[in-house]
Image (tube, rainbow, N blue to C red; front, top):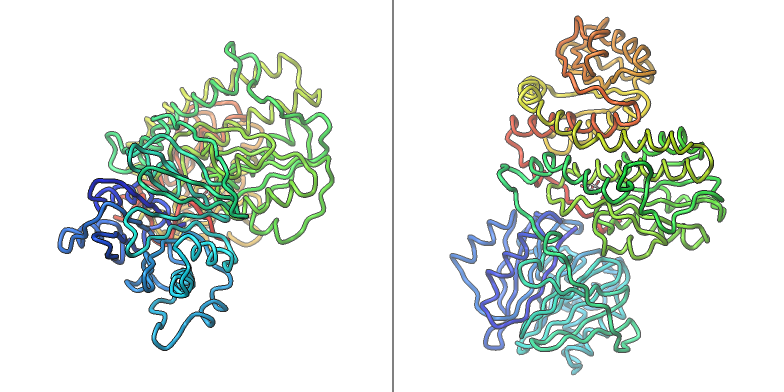
Length: 606
Ligand code: G6P
């Protein structure tokens, strides 16, 4: 949700800021802007829409300076207009902000004066006004920043730039993430290390309440109490900072195709070398646990939904799955024998983080399943399990989802073993199954030409239904979400058995019904549900394996044959055709696949 960057160096900074913003654009793309200081004077350029608009503006109307701040916006307060675009400037200060200032109305009432009116509808402008007020009252930039921070309520990462100061940047975080990057005669701040990838690999993450004072040659970090503190500098491996589309047209396409590789990486980490047992789960112990709560948002929540089936069936553990935004305010009672598992690609989702803190505060053990290893959720949970998907840039999550599933599957096997529900032979068999996933995924991706053809038809629909039973139900939900997100076709996912309790009323010859139906114990029941659709002239796309299609593939609109696999693995494999279907429908519709309207990848506001 909004990306911010600050650079203090010795090169012309505008193109470097734009380059860094490009790497943050997945966080929001409603508007973008930069501010620089040159010869002591602040200059700003802002534009509505994607970053390309700002680049064009800078060609027509360049700015100079070797120090600057930049912002890419996901609108919260106020529409994506020029006036609402960051940086916001009042008097001698400009600021970029990620987060929400909750007391902005109160601050606005206090700091707005007839000779200094507010010009935007944003909460952020209050930060600039507040800081400007303190500067005018004679405080130094650092004192004014500290006085401002003390007045703000809410979640934020901010970076300040001051007129007359061409060797000073001040950045602060509370709630939203912020990284400081170290260079040689230049220093940086960014919403994440990815933004700073081409500039530096030496990163320190600000802790909650910290602020940092940057000059070209120094970085000082202070705690919320204004005491100097040392924060560990980490070297980020270059492969964690690489983002490119490879030979693909979109990041999403590359990320779909990357899945066999990244899932294999995750398996190498969480299976023993001989693939006989799960490994790499130091500090995870389910033996004294009586209940699990799995908490997440969006696609990660559907990964939890699949994991519920695995934990309950394999480990016999009761599992509750929770949408983080609901869980945290419901104040559910928790006993210390409950384990909290938090799943998040970014590790920064505000609601998931708040839910983690709620569970920690009740004395429960917590474990996170995250992609960004340095994220706040990773740091604040007792154990953090990286999913090793690599940077995911497409706003619609794909490879992170299947890597989350991979880690959760291995975790469920661990729980089953620790609770005495799985023999060594049983564990070895499940691990061997998991080991076959990358190969099965490759075979499934090879079906892309057929899926492209099907997408040409599906993309004409106004509404699409996805149906699944058992662990295919969450994949139906995920398939519908993917289609909605990137092609803007209305889609719903349902448990096949629920069809006759309402959604069957929607069925007619115009509504494609995608039925996820692998052969296995639930095949007959799922096929019965499919016949209920066919009896009402529904257009069924049946996705199954050879055995399933032999049973049910006659008389349907279209079929897609996936490789046969064990029922345990089906969520990992059936996730791929629904991703590819959504992708190719979006291509047909000509939508912006990697940056669909209104969405952002990292949701750091509630
Ligand atoms: C946003 C993204 C989704 C993601 C969700 C949760 O809505 O667009 O792709 O699943 O946030 O994000 P997280 O980083 O916590 O997995």
